[in-house]
Length: 285
Image (cartoon, rainbow, N blue to C red):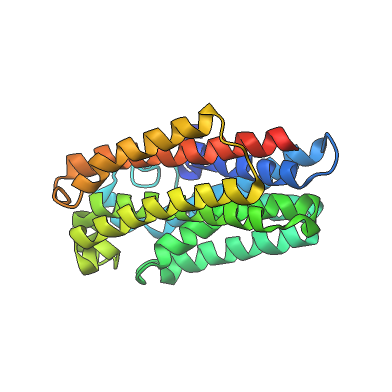
């Protein structure tokens, strides 16, 4: 078993991000200046549940990956299937034990995500939109895991809107990726929006989600009474500038290179939106 295979299965960067989202949820729900060891446990809950989700997905997709992604850990024999299954079990167990330590609500939500990830990898991934919805829920729910760990009564309209924003940001990312992967998904009979309805209509969906994220961003600013310093006006300018190449996606939806280029642009802007709000939330706690 290669160490690199373990980190590749976990999709290290993605799992670290999920762990940080849990920490963010804990901080904005806290009433004191520090959460001590709980922050570390919160990060590990997000990390291990995300890692287990990614690991089981690779286990279930191993036959497709032998042809489509031969450099993934199982096809390249960096780890055996049985070893990957043991790893998945350990990741899930550690994530749930730590979630139970945080709170009962954090445990129940984490367990729900873990169960849904198995069902998704086993049977649900080829159902239209289920892939996008469950992937997005798994990441965005990390925010609520953190809130539940600190103060379940802290759930507010602004936190729910932020949860929705993270959800839509991930859906946008996934949908944009589906346009680029349409050929391979079609061969493997995956029912994504681009495969079923075509890449042009999928491009319209991506643009609509991008605009919806912009609206939610301003909705959160308005509801929380956040003033509009130069930072937020700068974000607005960037958002509007990126609209030009994004709308060109309608006519260049079959150009895979352009799809990848605009995907990086949209995700850069959506990440900027999310980070700017996180910074403001943290500054107010």
